[in-house]
Length: 160
Image (cartoon, rainbow, N blue to C red; front, side, top):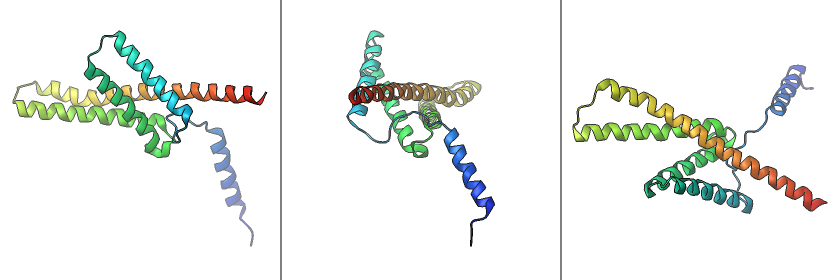
């Protein structure tokens, strides 16, 4: 009994397709001392930027929490293999929850808002969240891309 040519061709094609795809850089699934250093640096730069804007302390919590949740989404969703999609999904979901909270607030307060305006916010707010999530995900990926590059350079120097 041999393996049919179709199966061999299919397996070869799948291997070639996997070789052509470059892995996306995102929040790593394994944590080492370098990862912790990169995370600490990311938050130090983020909070320094917020400080220069004289942001309210609540903004630190909201923005920091958003970055943390996007990073966790990159780790856990899609097995960590699609960080861009995970960032879009998580950002949109967070802003969707904000839209729900806004709707509940409107209902509880009993205020009269234009239905068109409420519908517009309900549609655009999650889309805006997805864009912010993608942006934050790209920043996270970029930080870890630079961190990986520096790590490889340091390893080369140690080998010399």
